[in-house]
Length: 356
Ligand code: IPM
Ligand code: MG
Image (cartoon, rainbow, N blue to C red; front, side, top):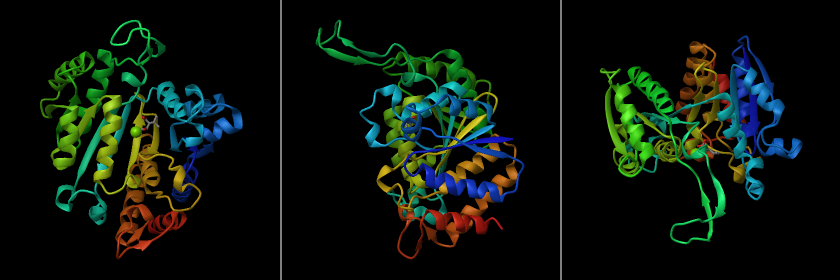
């Protein structure tokens, strides 16, 4: 088994380092190979996703990814910006199914911006379609506006589109996931306005008939945003498109107290996957040794479970994380009175020790 390790930019390198230490301590038969990605790859090779990095990722069974991006790259041409690396990996590896669990750990209930009773015990799973929608739809670009409110004016445009098979496969992923949980799927759309999401709703409804044991409901995205902060525990599995999933998953992450705790997995149809924390590169705290490595360590656990068939090892990591939280260890993002503030490396040390 081979793991491609792509730390990326900002806090990416610090947090991935801790996850790699944890993986090594498991003493399992896999090989890890590291490569540059994002801004770091642009600086060294002039491209955020160099050929060699893409090749390594394609050949690996799984990719452990840190984070990419820094404000200093914001003025580059779009194809050279760090974000293109993650989009390119998603597209090239066909990673269409993005799992973003939002779990509120008992010990962190107080860190949420919502009242404890709204989030205590929260365990929802956002399944975001990751290779279609307005993110990748063609045509897109800039031009002189041919019509509309200001003909002749400078204009930019993107295209929202989904094909039936793309919706079918992500719907199946959601229903299968719900079967292993509380058997409820909420499909989030904007069918009241958009053709794309009328098709989405129709297709999800059809696929839902194959899963009579799973309860399906539909929600417009604006209402879903409201319900997520009003009564988040009412959700079980949420399935939605690329753009809505991007936005709703950040909102869901904050319900749990810190986005620094949340892992994610992006899978293709052969269970090859890319695993990354749900948060970004946080250039403002990079290099300070204060970033929370737990989301990345938990992403490594997801990787063991989903792509490497090592569920027992995944359980071990998750139990170790629970243990360090119970010991009261907290990085600054989840620190509160009465707990012990630790840095990135100390948190990694504690997880290693708790692995037993
Ligand atoms: C995410 C990120 C990415 C996205 C960016 C970095 C391209 O926000 O994974 O949610 O928009 O998908
Ligand atoms: Mg996002």
